[in-house]
Every structure is written in structure tokens, then in C-alpha cells.
Length: 319
Image (tube, rainbow, N blue to C red; front, top):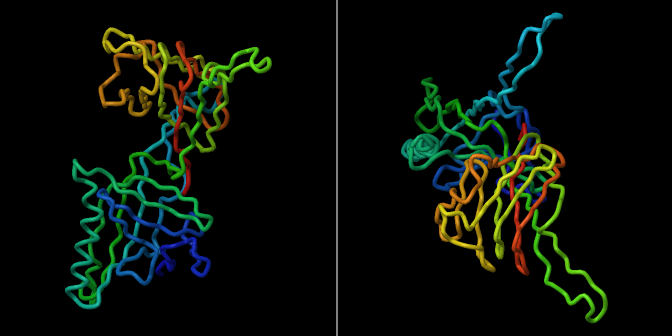
């Protein structure tokens, strides 16, 4: 049966519908070049068929275990696996040529994910409250017509298999933690006071998702040395703008460096590669487990305007 809903789930007169495995939602496929394809709108020329949809639930895992001398086994390692999403689609048109154009267009929207220069598309699952999660997908197989009488003239359907190298759903709303050096105050003028200095010190970062995330750090000068430490594991990395491989010198006020932890990438604000500024081989670009993580930001040579921004998108087992 078709899934019936509207593209705008926030409109009070248009209700989202029930989708197998995930409940009430509206789904859009976004192709690699940004084209948006509503998948749950019966009024359109293509929409998803509810019967047969699968693969939208929790991620698959491979468990590695060792025999236990007292019987049974003990879990040694858990490895998240790529997931497959089965996605039946019906395509139609007002006449044969309109159907043919739509059939070809939908095929291209999915199969172009396999072009090396374009990359994956993604499925976006929007909820009635306006929240949205998405997952990156590649076309694997299945875009074939039914081959039955009356199909292929003004309508046909196909059952696609979409492959997801990362099995987790990503929240569209990023979490950002901002810490900035306060402006210095004269201790005695107009009365005894102490300046705010949030850059140097400890804080707690909360990851509301279901699995580890790999944040992006934006460092704003002035700073002469930057150290980020995950307190519970003592993992850390140090960024030295004075490192010989960089030849830059202290970060001046307003200068920025961006550190990405997955994949590892360090870029100065003009795009220069600053990977040589980290304290290899001791540097560990650590991630954030679900829940609270105690971390320490330390900026030597900081001053007014010095800041650290930590940003990540929570990842979830289900849509």
C-alpha cells in the first residue's frame, strides 16, 4: 500500500503517516547534487510503498567472542556493520512519455550515488515536531520494473536496495559547545572583580546520541599552544602553531584553525594543511561517547577573543 503524507509535516492540516519500523514521519530522498525527492507524497509522480520497507531500525553488528574456560563465551569486540535499506518505489506519469521521463529521472537520482565525484545521497526522516534525522545511502540494486501486464506504460514499481556505509542515523541539529576568554578587568576598578576565563579549565560535554561522535574543533586566537584532553581516558592532542612544520607562529587575535577528528584533518583559515602542527605520534583525536564526558580546554597565550567551539551531530541507532 502507498504511504500517504505531505511534504510539509509542520502544516497543522496535513498529518504524517505511519511508516514501518519508525512510526509517524515524512521521508525525503536527497540526491548527491541536492535534488529533493519527496518519498511519502501520494500526490506526486513517485512515492514509497509501505509493504516491503525494511532496514530502518537498529544498526547491525558483528560480535567477536572467545571461549570461556568455565563454559560459554565472553564478548571481546563489537563491530558496527554497514546496513541495507530495502526501499520499494512506485513511479507513474499522466501518459507513457511522462512516465518514461519520471522513471528515468528517479533511476538517475539513485544510481548517481555511485559516481566517484558525486558521492552518496541521503534519506531524511522528518517528524511532526520538526526534528529530522538522516542517513547517507548508495544505490546497490533493484531498480527494475515488475515486468507484468500493464506495467511500464503509465506506471511501474521497483524494490531498491540502498547501502549505508555508516549504519547510524544523524541528527540534523548540531550540538555546539562554545568557550571564550573574557575581557580583562582592573581588579580594583570600580570595585574588586575577577575576569571570566572559560577557555582555560574543565567542562562537561553531553552527547545525547546512541553512539560515539567525532567532533570538529574551531580554535580562535590569540593562542600560543592549544591542548584538548578527555579527562576520563587522559587522551589528548596538542596543536602548536609554532611547530617547525608550520612556520606560522602564535595565533593572532581572530585567526582560526579547524580540527576535524573523522576523518582527521587540520586546516588553517585559508585552507592550508596544518597536520604538522599536532604532537604526533602522541596525539589522539578522541571522540565523545554517549552521555557526559569531562574534557579540558587549555589555551596558552590566550587573551580577549580567544575561543574554542566544539561541534558535532548526534548519531542514533534508529530514525
